Length: 65
Image 1 (cartoon, rainbow, N blue to C red):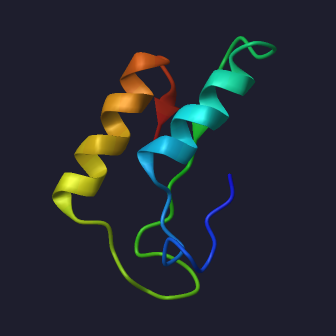
Image 2 (image 1 turned 180 degrees about the vertical axis):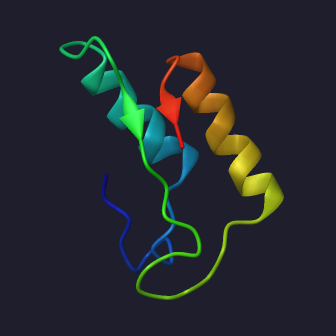
């Protein structure tokens, strides 16, 4: 999933939604691995950012670790 400089290397709920929507058309199982603290900036997601991402993951019943 693209997480560039524009989003300070953060996965946004919008990008996650688009990616999972596309992947769910052809994949039976969806797995998302979120690296936090992030690479290359070492910053962590806020609790609210994580909650927003989890809501999208739940919608697609994606496995998240």
